[in-house]
Image (tube, rainbow, N blue to C red; front, side, top):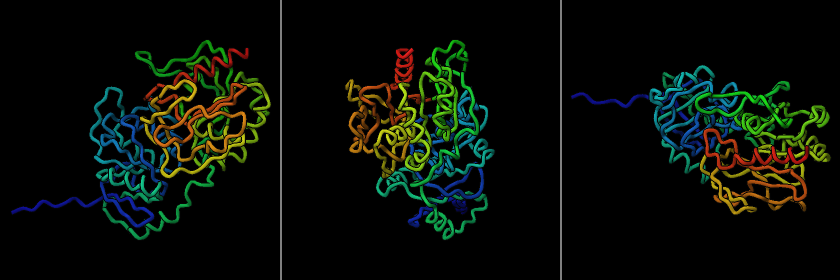
Length: 384
């Protein structure tokens, strides 16, 4: 009688509390140490892995079918993956999609990103929700040799994201122009040839689809590094200033971003912020930010607009939040999360200066909040 043998694990995920998950590795080999979060989106795994807001994090995908549509260069949010690694329930299958150019495993391997499949992601997600985002070490060794004690120590030694300025690590090295618009069938990506508004976008870790949405809203976009000064911003004579998403602790990035934004606020320019840009604007207006237990990461987050009563389904990716109790006089809370009541939007009461925590570009979706880009363009038109 022949007895089936269980394949030897080729990857493991070690948590700082000593818990270890075993599975099958794919992508690159080696070790990665980071904070672990979970994302509930059912689509867009490539966009998630290349979102600069995930710097310093490993992503657990709660949806099991990851990799089944392959990857395509058209869906990258930045040049290379930024998330440190990925954790999935099922091993990726061969891709089945007409746009696919490569398998997820090969794509990750070529970019030095480690992944593990065969993990009980429901149990892992529950642990994250109950205990907060843990520090972890992810290891992939085709021979299945792991020093568990050393991996747990690596996880315990990870300093965490509090106090960490990661925007400087993911921002652009120099300024550049952007005119590519949103993807549309059958043309794909097209260029904005008749822009109406000049926008300076501050890159704290900007996603390409945010810039595309600005271009599609009629903007001529100039992107500046996160460390740009107010003088450098105003030298472009913009009609509006955009503050992008990004990773890390907003208070740390705020040491240089807040003074710049405060100078911009002395002008009459419309200002629009998303995600980390929302937090930067809040700090510049005098509010505070706090670290969340496990953050918001997914494409199914209900957000209520207090001013219209409308509920929007949104994409989110953030581990810090604006403390709504700290908002100063003259700054109004406009949006809240219906999951936990946390702040998701603010605006100045007397000026077109506003921001949201969620991602209105939401590529691949949902696109309930896209109107915010059109609102920004309308405010610039009113100023003209």
